[in-house]
Image 1 (cartoon, helix red, strand yellow):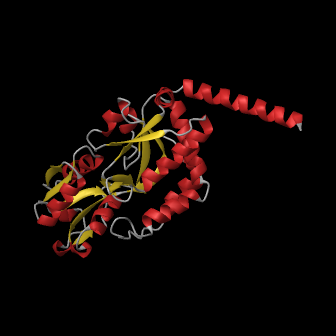
Image 2: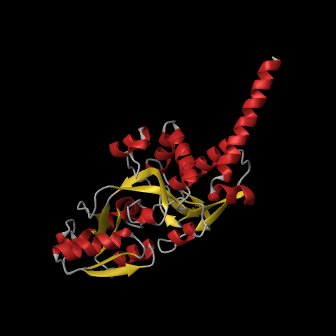
Image 3: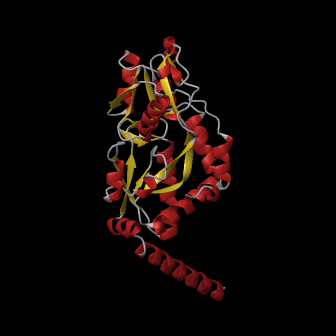
Length: 297
C-alpha cells in the first residue's frame, strides 16, 4: 500500500509540474491563471449559439465553451475560475481577441484563411452556408431573383464580401445595404426596406423561428457559398492554448456530451419562447465530431 501511495504522489507531482509548464508557455493561460478568471466573448442575439435570456449569456456555443473551461480547470489545476462574459459584435470581435480582452470567443465566427491571419480557431463546432431570407409573398428563391433589388447584410461579416462578389460576377445590379446587426437587417426585410437579407443559413433560421409570423418569411434554397465552419476563436500566436482547447473539444466530441448539447439546442424547444429549429445533425458535422483531426487548417 505504501508503494501505491508513493506512486500516486509522484504522479500528482509530475502532472502538476507538467501543468505549470504548459501554463508558463502560453500567454493566454498565464494571464488566466494570474487573474483567476477567463473572459468569454459572446453575442447577444445569435440564436441558438450565443444569445441572452434574462440578460444571461446562453446557447450551444456558450455551453460548449463552459465544458471546455471545465476540462481546462481539471487538466491544469485551475480550480474555480471565474468566467467573465464580454459582449462582442461582428465589427469588434477580432480586436477584442487580439487585445486580450477576450480569451475565447464563443459564437458564430466563420473560420476562413483570411481570418486565420487575425486569430486562431478551434476544431469546427458547426457548418453552415450563406443564403438569403425574403418575404414569402415575394416568391424569391434563386440568386437571379436578387437582381435589381436592395439587399442587406451585416457589417463585419464575410457575407458582405460574398454578396459583393456575386453582384460583380453575375452583374445583378444589386443595391447592397449595410446593417449594424442581424436584427436590424431582418427588420429591414420585414418592413420592406430591403428585399432580402444575406447571412448564414442557421442564423436566418433562428431569426425566422423567433418572428411573430415565421410563415411570412422564406429562406432561399440557393446558396452564396459552400458549407463553412464555425470555430471558437482565440488569440493568435498561442499554439499551446489552441492545442489544449482542441484537446478538450476532442474529448467532448468523442463522448455523449456533444450529442446531448446538439439535441438540446437544435432539436428541442429553445428558451425563452420554446421555438424549435428542428435541425438534425448533418452527416458532414457528425464526421467532424467523430474525427476532428481531419479538419485542421
